[in-house]
Image (cartoon, rainbow, N blue to C red; front, top):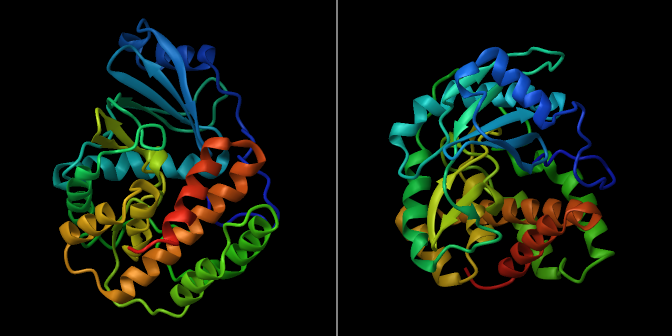
Length: 302
């Protein structure tokens, strides 16, 4: 999910590459023939990638627009290195695909992680502790060659103009951009960075968290992986957990969150909530619901 965005909301980006089951089957037959006979069916389409289920245990992930071509390379490079330190499952690439048959991007065969996206299957409040532990296991120092993402992990002031446009647009359509939301955003803009840069997921909204029988079963879609302000990922607490007590428990498990980082995290939650609601009102009701929930939760105590 891009947060750079145009000056007017246009909803989900249009696919730049035609990706269908016939193409995926042909790519598998050419490059991974031992997998080509497994049943294949479309699973989901996001902003950047198309997903197919492959048999019972695998999936295929392919960029659907040029901007995502480098992002899947980041997943292929870094997820195998990070997986062992993380406290929740992630989809480490099982096989790598290369451009072929007119399709111009690298692509991945991944394990199929069990569960349903958290926006459709909210995690139990008890999952706040393991989720806080997961964030703590992720937010460690990154090497010098870690990927840089221009719209994640940096100062919120770099996104100020775009977010202000979105807040204005959403305020014209809904009552959710309250004076309190604007104060949260303004406070975050004026709060300096007070922690060193860390590894980040970068796009930790509820469609990228899987839940199985109330338990968080996996964290997916790592295309925006980068290094920067951990407040970017801490914003996910308002996207995931409906109850203030659960958000507080996650922060307690994460341990030692400064007031400044908490203010920036709330600002990042305004950013994510506004872009999901703004774009979702155009063509994606699921994203609109996530955005609306996020903004309402920000109006509550922690």
